[in-house]
Length: 484
Image (cartoon, rainbow, N blue to C red; front, side):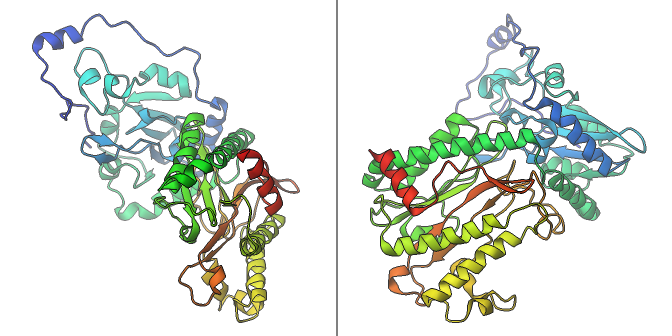
């Protein structure tokens, strides 16, 4: 395995370096160590997490890469975020983690020693620190040295160069979080015949994250709280957004400013969908103007500095007041969401809250005459005609990923049962397409979703996003207060 080496990258900003300048750049630099008491947030949680993973795969080497930088354009990379499994096991969240790899090395039939393979701080006796635009300190900022990284995490560290040597020659049974780092995949012969065992590692890493501990719930609540503030910012900005020819982009920018100021940024690309754009489930073009007579569907979440995600949606009247048709549709979705929330409790099936919400939707559509068959018939497994107007699932797990734990096996997640400490969203919607001739004209082009974040408690669920109003009356009152 040959790992990429920092080099003297060329680009539009590069200028020749004379021998005199190179010699001068290598002298008289003061030491700049990290504070000796600095630790990753939640430092005491991570040994237990690694021990749980170790217990699942005795005697096997486990390789969990952080991931690699990806080019956005020419010599500019996308902003880097480490893989969530790497974050969950190490607590390391920064952009400086690109290319790093956690190895759990078996210490016998049972137990592992974790070793972090890192690229340490650029030495000042070469050109990397001021000439390498990807890794040089003058270009992207400092990194910890090996000893500092060990203190931060409580994990033994090794130079990234050592990983290539580790993966050469006879190897113990090895599992890799594959498709995360192509060079690690290549060095270990992935995917090939190892696909099944690597899939088991990915599944276990997801399943271990299904139940959140108290520290994680606190981080998620912080993400929710900042998201609530971002929604308030958006409402205050509506007068300006309504005047702009791309008001959706204005709204996106307002929310994203809050996310970047209070956390790492947005947990996903903000959806700011007005009018019929709200019928597009993942509308992220956000290039439309705002019609004061239409609704705005805002689906947005802050990601904390520890990389925990909120995921909230509100559908708001841009005029500040729902008209009768908007109110009718909104209240059906709200009733569906309330039914879904009422179904949350330990021991309930994960799919129960979706089924509860969809029954309300189907019955409402039948009552309106939109669904021309009885609700029970439409809800039958061999029918599903109601889905033309709602289409997708009504929620998902939430955590380090906004669609968290997605590699979990079905019997643990989608077909599993809820447990205390799980955090999830409930988000039914109606997406009444503007060109759907099965709908009365007045309903066409309405898109409504209401999404909240909840943690399963001993006897039900706690609404983490309760600070944002949900009812028609409360939304109108809230908007009026913010707009005065």
